Image (cartoon, rainbow, N blue to C red):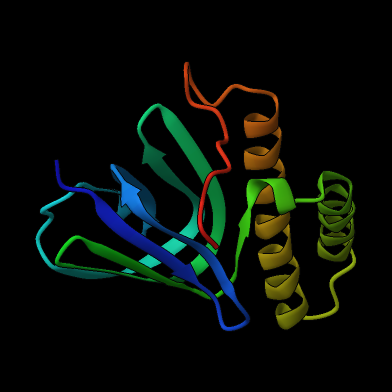
Length: 151
């Protein structure tokens, strides 16, 4: 049975790499994308959100903050502005970031301040939502946060 070769890269590092992936679900700019083996060639913008990687009965999650997704010949390459594995998310730090962003929105001095604070609030909220859900085991039946990857 065909499998996907998946690589997720940021400007700083390779975040994830595996050759035996069954499915990738990613937050496309126009909605969620599901990529299976033999998918048509594709290049698209990514939105901020959760990337889910399914390998057998395991599902791994990462948080991505924009970028591009390319599919060619069963290879999925994600070039992300920023990406983190769920286990790398510091929930306490994300909560602090959310509080700071909410305070900055209340006390904004300019439109630029507001835009920066809203972006920070979105990033912190995504980290908290996905990190809390995955760590509490509500990712779905049989879908743990497996850790057998090759990066």
